[in-house]
Image 1 (cartoon, rainbow, N blue to C red):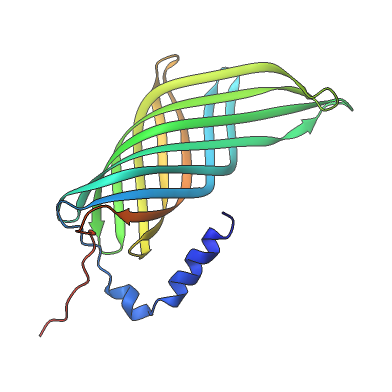
Image 2: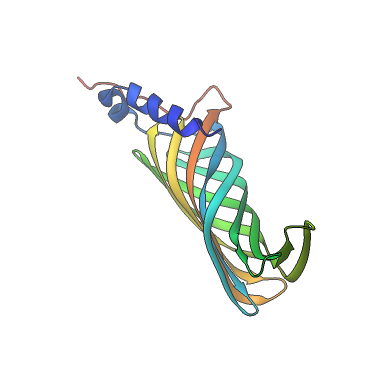
Length: 213
């Protein structure tokens, strides 16, 4: 898996620059695609009762499908997962203080295609979990001091650039603004994304422009 980004980079470099510039992202109505988000870095910000947990780590990954309902307009349903853990902080010879977080989410986005750029916005349903406590490295046991869970709704924003018709690089910003357990509050997952797309219909959703004249 660690060689996937390098392989994608080599594929991009192997494409003639003129060919890349001619790939206009024109989604024909009726096109269906599968999308796979490869493991990538993410940022957590979680509102805890005694403060805020903020950490940059990896991975964030997901998969989903899209349907083009109009030219250069498509809806995208996505399921994702993000996890992170702070390095253990040694408190004494036997114990470490550990912190970790996890988020699972479902997003429904409407997307607009402008040449090689895709901009998306929509609604998200997410679950946040954060745990912290002591870990005994000799006994291999945990003593949890705090467990935080939050299920709620929010919105999502995304932006992607397509260097190739089957791959995109972008950013996903997904805040949760209302929690069923805690009411209104702000917490988010923000992730870099490398997405591979696979057509499911005869209409791949990408049309190469023809020369005029």
